[in-house]
Image 1: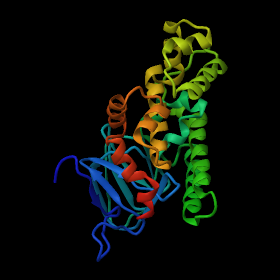
Image 2: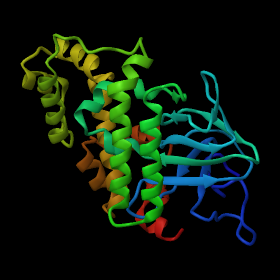
Image 3: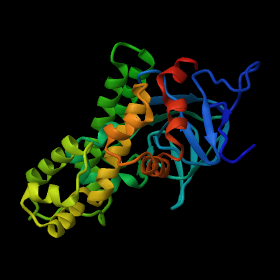
Image 4: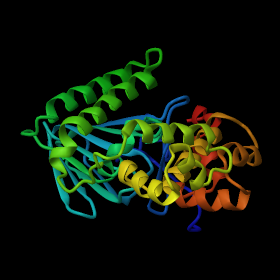
Length: 313
């Protein structure tokens, strides 16, 4: 098989008889070590229950992965260390983090995968951005573990209920998870995490982010946003990175990539229109940047995640 071909395999450890590509609740699509998580139409969250032995070789995906064990042990091999996650614990694997997962026959767990794009427009999420880019391992003794586990169980219940607005309700619980992490856990658990200087006015920086959200689809140089805040471009560049955890250029690029991804999924607009509406200067630039973030071409991304393809699952 060519290295750029998409390999369609079962999402679960065991494939059902008579259909070598279909799992009970969708597909697992692989291109090399990159996995493209497939979602139901009008959703961007997928929950896989499992009570069988399984092993997933090292892979990455744009989705955040949360393991919620009920019985047994789920073993994750990540670049920094190995995590043996048991009942009463939670492990959050950040987007694009390589990981291997092995589970024994006595394991019972829920695997929650979701696209974090919806969080990016929330201004105060920028202040914990750097911290949520690393694995978060919640043990039984952590104060945050119990309330977060309860929220995750509500997410699972909501997902399988398929009641009206279930995708939005699931995200409301996940947002509460990250709010708890940011408020009560991350600052304590990650002592070396970057802290915003008191001299930076959060209201002013949030206004700058709002300005970016309203103008990212046009040419938007650093100087323009700096002038909006009343700072020089050099000072603004420095304090923006302190506040957001990423540079102005990176923040703007991610904003545009996510806008393009949403257009590719939820519309049938030509690529040229997507390029314009997302604020990219040319198709060539768009293709290069989009592929560097999503690990596939815009056309492949639309094929995988577009509503028409999900309806065919």
